[in-house]
Image (cartoon, rainbow, N blue to C red; front, side):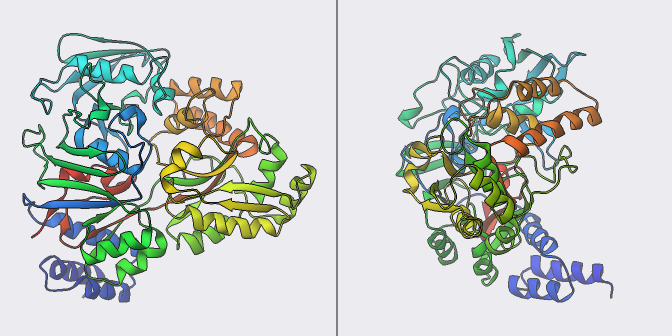
Length: 533
């Protein structure tokens, strides 16, 4: 009997319920199957049956914040993104291959110079309050990101739009400041949701959307419940009656809540807790390779990190391999102090991997005059699960280089408002983007509100804009490689690791397909999830 035949035989028994999850995993492991293959087959089981309607899903997330909002221009946390995708839709969605797919827009075409883009919209979409979806909604929604007072994370790349106009009720024409061959995929960003024309009362908790769920109750920092939109335009769900998003900041409590059945789905699983999931038949691991990363943000406009010797000292003082092995338990890959992941075609593999080097770190910290001087580093698992443990590893490895890191862990509900882009050095984390322009524009373009390190470099900005219109892959990669090199040498990011996306669900929960762009199926589980009761 061949291995392929054995695998199919075991899988069919697993799908039919004749083999427990533990027996299935054990049998495949004994055959030498990789963890990635086993994870994939477990997910495939969840997709093998016919979806059923009904029931309630409770999602345990990393925490609830008083600043949580249903305004896409103010989304920060992963739980915010999950809620956003529950009630709104994108103009363009993103496939598992990271390519753009039609969504509220049925099709699009570009001018020869990629400066003018014409999008044809669906005609069968209605808002939750019964109004018809039109081109005016698209122009209004995209425009909110680029107003003078906007602090939207999407402002950095949406600002390339020079003009938007509707051509009838179901056509929108975008004119860009410069050509951009990747413009459709930019519209798949996690903040570029389409909201209703003229709507501004997001604080009321009654925000209408076109998405698979409607708001039932929304009280920031307290309670979030959504109910199925039976008039949703897509035939691909939704299936469950209600979704509740519940903040459980402590990862152990979150895992225990999943195993006990108090929640059905867990967003952002700490790799240390994977073994707890693997020991039970009650839950399944959901895993995908990604460009998501955890990092240390060092601000260039204030002491002590306005000194590049301090930044270089810290970059050489971190033992990334130990973080991968001990914190991420192998569920990740090395960072190299820029945000482009090894899975990205534009990853610059000619840049030497920065390794842990306490001698170089000591040289630079001495040169800065800060050897053994206490340096505050603010940390939390809010921006990326596992960040606290990773910074503890950092503290230990840095100490061997004469760097005295003082770890400070503020309350989770204050992290975004009181620490991020407030303190000189803090833990941070970012979702992966399908093209380099998105992360480089939002996190590094001069003057942008989400530029967490206050990196400002005219040459960098110039190359970033020029690269958008370059259609020759090799030339474009060369340009992106130069940007990655600049950030690695002089920037304020210590990219600790690129993270495998790890979530978990109860065994009875089906329909969640891991996606390399974000947690719980690129935050879109609301549309496809169902319960096999």
